[in-house]
Length: 236
Length: 112
Image (cartoon, rainbow over all chains, first blue to last red; front, side, top):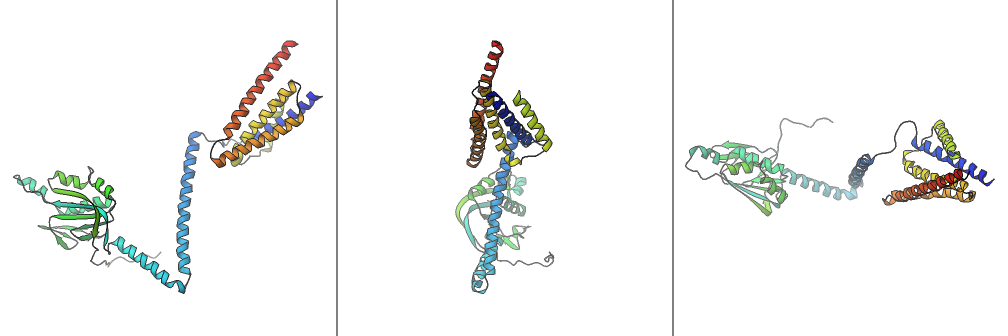
């Protein structure tokens, strides 16, 4: 009798287990389980998505806070003005219309002392293209503000060889050239001493090059005008 | 023998019903299956050695499964794989029970 009872219980229990197994495996062919590598990838993906989600939430929160500030009407008008002024000042800093200061590097470029060989002396001079390329290098290294001999370099600057001097954005500058840039000092300095940069190329041409780290550099604002004639805002 | 027939019937019913558990619960059910399997082996051993008790079997069957599921849930929340503990314990016990069942069955056939 007792044995019989056990058989019945075991029978029922095995049916339940079999049912669970069948339900869980799902013979419809799809595999619910991941191997270790897939699990790892999925796990990393999840972390990435979560962090993305967090940053998006933060953005949403900031934008929402801004919006609610604007929506609060007249009594907050001064707040709005302050906000707008802050934005204008930020934009001016980015455009180069404000005097700025910060840590950075100072590059001194000077024509090489002419030696006995006449053919190499052309190489020893600094040309307009050199200045442009050095500026390009600095931008590549993440410089936030650049000036050449006190002239702020902005987005539409050009360099032109004008004989003994260089025409930078309409202003004539002569040697020695002092190029200053604000940015992460170590990044700028290390980038400029890399093999591929123009500074290294200049050094090999016997040009007198000096790169110095500086804790505090002041760069004056761009005093020209920003104007446009041909472009206009596209209709959205 | 009974256990295999039961398993087979259960699997067939499961296939006929074609109910799929959501992927989310999949690890829980896996560990629960293991716990249930352990109970079934225990019951088989009990029935062979004539000391089977229904109340202990039923409480163990559901209690072990519930505890295992709770462990998986807790491990998931804490970030440590506690379910490994359940898997190792139940796995070890299944082998243990199987070894005893084997011995008992062989002794039985020899004594005949």
